[in-house]
View (tube, rainbow, N blue to C red):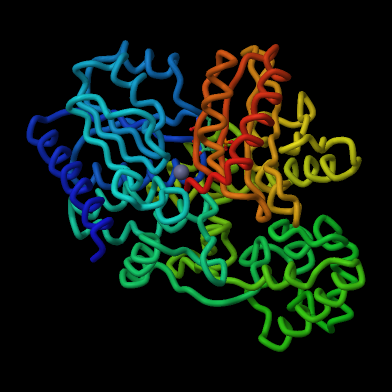
Length: 479
Ligand code: C5P
Ligand code: ZN
């Protein structure tokens, strides 16, 4: 075992011992987790771990950690708190507002400052493990659950879903790597997940093939993504049968030959559009199948599971997502499926809006700015920024997208690095710029966010442009 991993596991052990001690004292636990897929998966893992220990708990999901959220926690009775997939970026705030509360932080965001005295802080960055690529918030939470009991190894699949939700599939064949690789192995050994190399079409377990192809946005395939009719034409050209009797076939049912002819047609199509063939190769990658889930449900495919959780979180139905992670496969799943459809519909609409007119994406000296204002929902802006950044090949500048949250007098900003960008720390840029504008910001090197007062948007954007420029100029290679 590497020294880095050893340190991380020791910290996980300390957190597990703390939970054990809380149990002996008969505490009621408060869990607070992040609203994205990784955060919901983390909440599910810790919830199941506490449930198995017979420890009473309550889970609360937050969009972000700010003074208001922490103060609300401070006003409650001082029961122990577990932060999952959040907390490390706001250690000072936690120390100031929650003195005397027993606290565990299980996070993978880069820590800012020092953990307050007595707080158990488990974070890969403290041990030289890259938290933006190698392990997610759900992964850190899983390591602790596994230290609590080996029986919790059967929760590894949720940590895989969390890592996919945080787009950590950046290793070879679009697979997970680093500590995540070990977590995937736990998920395989407990019979939950099977890996295979396949076409990464969106909705591979649930959608008719032409729709799955049209809904694939990562990679974005010009002339195919968002174009159901063209996809139908392409598929019939490839001689692919779309229906089995009355039932639509799904991509997971395609035979090897069918996949090969579809792939070569897509490649030809892209070449004809003047798009580099590399793009098509990004369509082939590691599929994580959750073999215990029913076929034809969005839970069967790890990426689709993650996007279902993300949709629940973003459309104010975080409770549904948590229920699914806690094991509900009845009404919660049916409802979540509807939420997912609605979310995807809105997302496709917004992405068409982004690429509809050139001016929507403004090129500045060092960044691209997407002026979402009140055209992009604050709930979608993070995902829209990710998709925009990953679909701007060769663009060596990060994407900064913002949307108004009018009733709070705020703008929600999301910063994302695209594939061609030089390595700089966007989390630091977001934090410095947001603080200078009276807001809050932070996050990972490749994906960060901020909330700032509405009237400061222009100032913030200028500052971000400058800070990015300075870092690129320095050849900053900080991870
Ligand atoms: O909200 P968004 O998806 O753009 O956030 C990107 C990353 O930045 C997330 O991991 C989020 O937790 C982090 N973030 C943060 N502080 C903020 C806003 C976002 O650490 N104020
Ligand atoms: Zn996360």
